[in-house]
Image 1 (tube, rainbow over the protein chains, first blue to last red):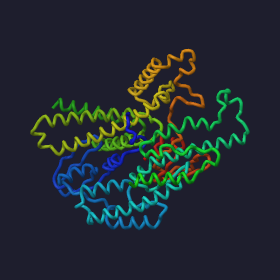
Image 2 (image 1 turned 120 degrees about the vertical axis):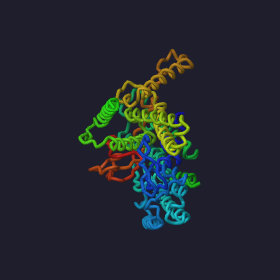
Image 3 (image 1 turned 90 degrees about the horizontal axis):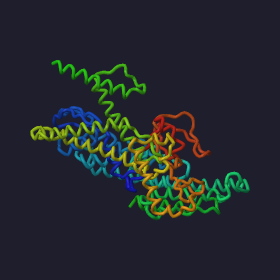
Length: 263
Length: 247
């Protein structure tokens, strides 16, 4: 009610892009403009040809009215992007540190609003960005296969890339943790032989993992029903007969999820 | 002339108040070169804080403390800005002259409003979901809510209770045990509360000495710039200390 399901625990791509619009960029004004007092910053006074730093959203407004040129960020040059691609290709288990946090969003925004201000032809930059995106996506996919319930490290991932995997990763890790906990509980009980009498008052004689079944799954699955697709909304029922690690099911979840993100 | 002086004096007083208010928590107050520079810095800080609040509230499983001070000063500035726009547009001559300026002011106003709204809505969503848990008398929990939010929680709880009572709970008069809405036996917890074990995405802002243990068996080092997905509970204290942030 207060928040549409797609915005619970995560962000829309447009929201990630909105955040990226706050990145500072350098512009070359074409005409003078007095400094403007805003709520979140004071825009510097502008004089023609004198470089100033402003948030990207201001640059886009000015650019649309042909009142400035945007100095394309250094990392968005053909040269640097080629290097970044090399770096990405040379190590398939890590993301390179050649790109900023908001590289996808800023790249797209600059390409769209100021294609004529780029240091190389727009289609060259666009293709390079796409190549880098694809190679990085492959790494994300590989990383998802090894998803565990404890933690995952994602150094140098981009904001948009992170947001894309967020619903799937959160849901999977939370479910894996619940499975793990119930396996541990079961083992503990097996070791103890039986439940201690003083804990329960007689009516609660069920196993502890039954508790999990009641309380946890509804809460967690309701988070992500809409964001990941109905196939994933109900995780495979925990099977208490084996060791709880059903690799096949996990892989299947990966694949179907990737269909949805790759569309 | 005299009135100008007095105005300046009052302005100074107000500036000082503002500064004392903000820097109460021990930031250096000794030198203060022409208040405009500090103002500018504060503005950008406040904006950055608002962005962080929004991101945090959206991604954190628990409800975080309401930043009343920031929200108050932001709503004040929003109001000022709206007044400015109204004044400027009232005079058609001025309006045509400063069209661009107005466009920038209006765009920013909308951007800030979007964030403020997003922040409040993200909180409202959690308050709605965990109203039973939040309507306890535990002051630690209640303190996280603003006055308006506290009022909302209480009203929601009483209204729902009344609705349920009238519609069906009154039929179970003979067994008062099943009339309860807040039964918290380990089998079936009726009070939905935030799961602090849920994983979150974080960025490490500064090196943290030692290792952090996760789930008893794994431990990791937190170095500046690292991005991790891990259970909220293991990292909560570093977030509160500002050493780690939500992403």
